Image (cartoon, helix red, strand yellow):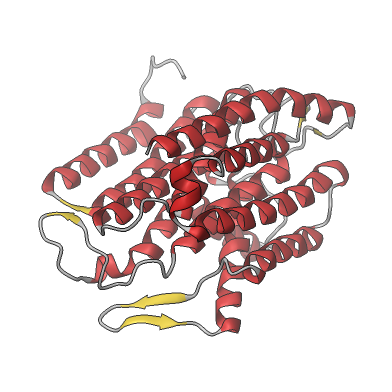
Length: 374
């Protein structure tokens, strides 16, 4: 755990420091987000936050390579993490070009598919699908490649869609990364496996990078992550899940707490948990596609009806809307992890109380008079 904490702190510190440099580069190259009708910010804001995030992730990776436990425990940990970092650097470069020259949607999609292809080419992909009562179903190469591309591209665009308020995407991804870190670490611990897990390493670095970026990006933001950041975060989060699939046999996966018998839930954990962590951005993505298709628009054409826009419409301030969406993301992500790994009435009571608090903050607080916005 200490080495993971060091990786987290390195990513946070380096990202925090590089953000200042990235902002200056963006200003000098005129990579600036101008004010548009659908935007919430009222003054131009520089891009290139993704460059700072990438720098933090690179620093965390090279520090991890020098740590005895992470670098020596399992040969595939650093290799797979390096593959994900390389694919992330590529998709970040595509985002930088978009921040500078506003690439069309198909060009960006092509870049995302190529980044997913890099993962597949070096073996970071879905291999096995758990089948309750039957063990695991081995995918052939074409099936595995197609599923991997779909998951990676969908996650990248889900994070991109949710990046609409200052600090929102970084917070949602940061919460998801920390929740998935807890899952990766604890599922290995509960099943007496090595605690050097690629998914845990990637999520520790990703969570740290998000934490280091948020002070510069929280309302009022001094820097936006841009597509270079949102695509990088989406790829890292999806790749973290890819590295875990097939690592644990369904018959070996057990939960803490009362009873460790085989059941449907433990069998499907490596698929359920990543999906639950991404539920907030994925829900926003699906609703946007449905909404735009019904209006006769192309699904990638922007509008001003995302979940965060609706939070502002019902009376939340900018900061409070972001904090509440973070709270929802944490409820779903950590709630699923805790419920998956620990069979305990106390866990369900905690999740229930958390849910009620979040509902009250979301729907009741805006209607109360005399409450100053956060």
